[in-house]
Length: 441
Image 1: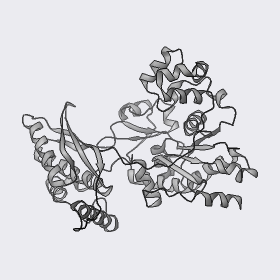
Image 2 (image 1 turned 60 degrees about the horizontal axis):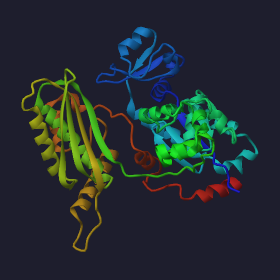
Image 3 (image 1 turned 180 degrees about the vertical axis):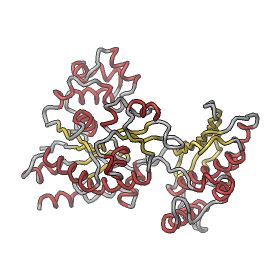
């Protein structure tokens, strides 16, 4: 007899705002929101529950948030601290299940299937979940919510329904739980699919469950059948940790102030291109296409792209094209530059295997990037790197504002979260059977 899947979804509550409260306990109980933008007072990027009661929401201008809640507190983001607290939270979570799949800085799934046979003999699932939440609150000072169900998608819906706190969708009650919930709440259902389902009369999962499964298959293919099974509480999926290559890498940076000097803007752009390409090489990837977008002080934009004849990994080739695109775009412009966005996509694997005739250029570049990255990690600081490229050094000499670069928002791909947690991109949980033995003892 197959065991029923029990998947737990854990999500940090208003994560960035909660991190600020963890860093400054005096803020506990007060409305708090975190502001983005070049000076930390642009738009709201996170707000705690006390602030949301005043109507403060993500994307709202900070001055409007202050007008709605004069006694609230605006915090500038501290992304490095958010990463640290996230790292501590995930290290606690990985002690509670044989499989942990992080999906963002504050969100992950745990496979608790084997616990039903061993650990839950002496406790209940809800007591176990509350113990996890209480430990994270006690040791990391962060509130979390969670949902337990037979699949990752349903667990996420349970989290949304149970916030703040934990909610279990008990086996056999899945269809009842879903009956009145709108289909738009499920991840993977965008506006187009929502409209197509609505045309069939299906606005809730109960409506979907009442439709013939073959009708959904004819309309949506395999996904339609899966949706029908899900709506009827019959969709059981195991939790798998799959670390895939990234498909794109990008940088979008608002400059410290509107930059009228296009040569200074170009220096910054080349520095960003060097940083992104170095990251690609460390992941043993190379790019076939790139795109550049320039936003001016009046929020108008111009942009262009380029497709290489062959995938590229060398800065000498890529930076030359980036500079050519920039000069072509800015030839007739006169407005100061506000924001620069650079994107690489159509990525492919970089062959770094040595040949019979010696090491390849790609292998040497990757080794150099790894060494430079390690030296900066060990000996460097955010405002004083141990090693810098010529473009990075020139940027600091041209503009003192770049001596302390703006911290990047910590939305990183799953592979980077996994590597930081376990030190490898490979599946670190291959010893799942050892967990079962551990629980049995």
